[in-house]
Length: 89
Image (tube, rainbow, N blue to C red; front, side):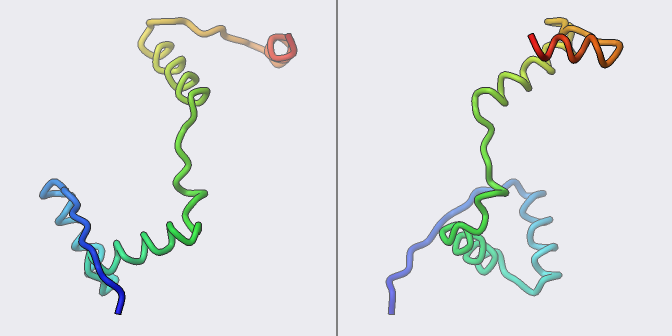
């Protein structure tokens, strides 16, 4: 029989309650759910849903935040031709 190890996860009370309620509907315990997710992760079955944003994506998001907060104004295009011209430069 393989040796087993424990993993401890800290959750705030509200999140823990919501997790337990949803898992109860599926007739699963948090331990069973964690085992399923980690097994699928190791098998490479969750790779597409766990993508982490790279530096380019993070920089683009920061530009949008800066534009929304007035910290930096992004260029505006009012017609397709002017947008297309800017993209092709």
